[in-house]
Length: 315
Image (cartoon, rainbow, N blue to C red; front, side, top):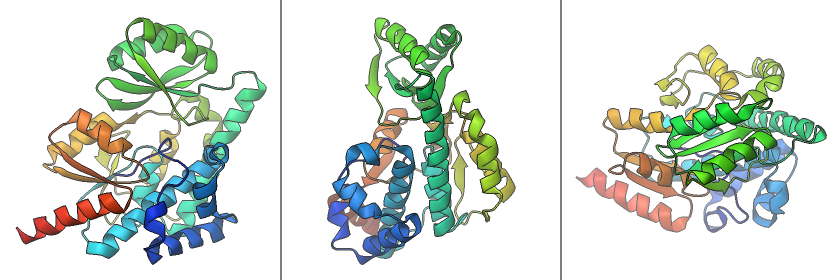
């Protein structure tokens, strides 16, 4: 499992960097492509810069990919299936050889810039801020109803189905604030997100044509490892359809709940999260609590995972 935006922080991967040449090499190659020092950014910040979408997306992509490559170097246990939350689908595609390293970085960098353009445009129209908000403690159907009721002349909709009682909403500032107010009155908690773009909602529609044009120049291959599409909840094999789904993902919600249910129904019980934090591990256990989930994000968690899976090999 590979996470999306919101898991970034200053100092991520710091204890893995010094003792693992593969981490250093991957970040150096990424920095050469991006034309700035990516490792320096995630270690020294400032956080305000790291939280800008077109810096955040390459940072999380490369961090997650580097941990995955380190995992393979240590024991070469190949997963049966992959899944990514939003941006994480791009990491999954890189790890499954759907796209190459250079194209993956260029793609998420460009995606981030387009998404940031939307934010700047909204800011110019005095609709800045609160583009994404987590609502915790209410049923998704109730939140959907409130969004529809409070949208009025603005846009607000569920952008992520994270757990059975946690969703993320995206949209215009005024509409988001109206929804949050009512949800709070009904007993919900809201958690701010370090994401300054209205991802996975209709406000993303204006960037679709630019993104589609950019995708035409990138070669997509058949996945070497199946990847669950979090819109249709299926493992797509056609490169053409995978591209199409990335376009749809810009303005449609991510359904992590159904993704994890799909995995569980395949009788897959051991899951690994590769990323800076353990966000997906936490929400995945809330969906199906008997899954064995380990998040690998530092030396300690890497050692735990290596010990567990090496012992499983001996059984």
